Image (cartoon, rainbow, N blue to C red; front, side, top):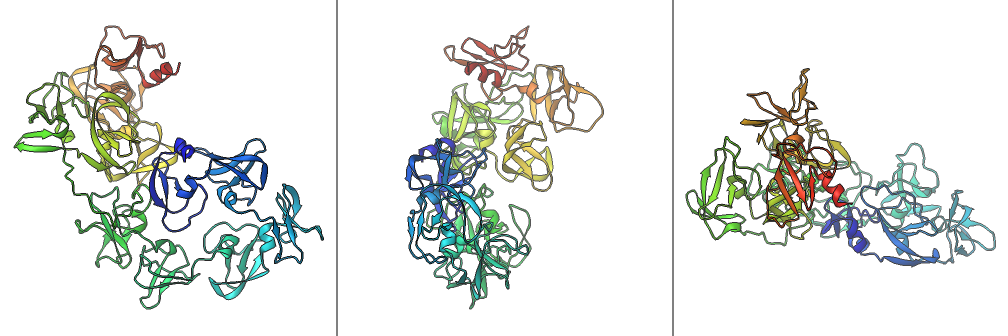
Length: 635
């Protein structure tokens, strides 16, 4: 578990297929999910022993190896020849690897009565090149050999029978095959896994099952399923629409004959009450919706109201497809049916009288509502988000002069489920400490949301984001948080990121740092006017930035003044330290200071003149950017 935690940020939940062993034991197995990658690990896999002794490799101990989500796993298990998952056991001396499932299996040294041979077979305790007598495959594994005949067998081949009466296909017996017929799709009809050298097949019905499903068929009947009140019976190879989720992508239903009810095996244990990131209330599973035209609030596609779906008891027009509601990034994997709903007031302040409040972070004094107006760039900064207060409503402390907060920042709840990691978060004060936001990757001060397990920190800008996300830079469609192993290009700045906002209707992508850019800023290059965020424009005119004096791509986002024609790159407008309060204690090891020198200072990281509006003073160094800060700290 400890080695897994070094690579993945885990929280307890339930899931389908395990990325540690590549198996899905049941519909919702207990385990752990990584908040960043979405990978799920069975509890048994996550707590596997660090070192094991294995009879297939007795000369050395095998150590567990965990591969990160950003690395590809190469190689295959030396026992079963299956592709190695994210966790496996490995000997670095011999380059020997086996997956967790094969490591757990008891090693059978002798097969006394094999189905395919008349003599006893014994395990050859070393890897040799051999030709299997049944499937004819030349392989370099651990064969089972007959000492009398000199023949070699794979274990599965030795234990297989030429013909199999199978409970999930009682109409015809299944024949053992070692070559996949060209007329099939090459997959097991039950688990959808790719067929390997040995499998069973019915040529009349084009029905195939792999060895694992042949040994462990799904139960023919299920009693007391969550999805239905009666016993369900397996009816394989029937194209149908699932009554629980409305999909028709798995032709192996469980049915209730007396109700004409048909359901996927994966939908049998659908959770009844859950909380998702796309809605403020709990939602409940319903066998069907009221007759009408329903649209899923996640994928925006039509919902078949005669099939199961999730709805909200407090919002009569809200409904979601079952699969959309239970996918990673939407649901946190926690069933809430037996958990009482938390009705604690999450409001961050108490109203004393009209326009006067008492905020829980500044509870000793009252705050009075005022309207900000600043045309000279001398505005004070919000204690919560550290951004200057311009012509917006804000609360000001009636006693001290250091606590001032935007009205929208004061309205932030004390507790919430965040949209990025789907975790319970608590609002705390972080006024004098430097932290890194796990969403936008900016360093910041001010208030922050911190997860209950202490793993995730979000600044209040990212912590206040909800889905669907609407941005003026893409007003026609809503945006949704999207995680990808491959970086995507942000339409606003051209940078690459793996966690972005994307549009499900078109190819628009917005990274998190650009999603929180302020619409209006003050800059020393235009002291008389505000600069506004421009969302790109198609023009043949040549633009240039008045800070760095280099070309500016007008199709990307930039800041401009409608009165003076001033144009600035986003990076040149802010630099990297926009969310850190300028100034600080003299004894602090770091301090952000305005770059208002007559002559721009030289950065100790890149040896260039500092051109951004704020610079970092770290110990004895002057630094212009985060990149320069990291290069100095790493020296």
